[in-house]
Length: 110
Image (cartoon, rainbow, N blue to C red; front, side):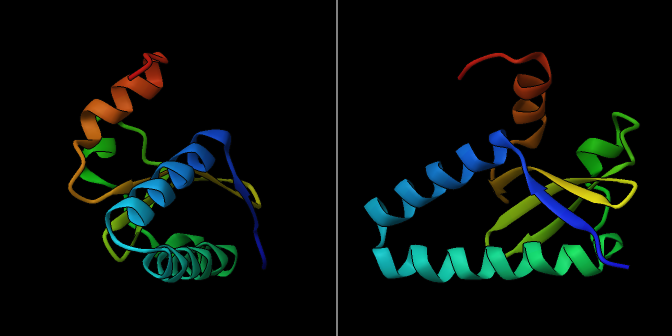
């Protein structure tokens, strides 16, 4: 069974932020490599959405329908609903996930 993958607005903003950061700090080619790897990983979710694990920070909130896959130095946080995979966030693995989730769940601006 193939799942539909939907990248939510919040994840699109994460990708733009990641793009800007990588281009400014490293190079356009680093961004292009990272972008290709992220796309491959997201396409894999269309076939194997259960491949990811429930992040500890999310499990503490009893939100087990949310999962993550790692792609390089990034976490792709997603939710599976019926035959759709919703990508909620693309964040650096070193980022404080609890603060990020709190801001997003409470819709607090940075």
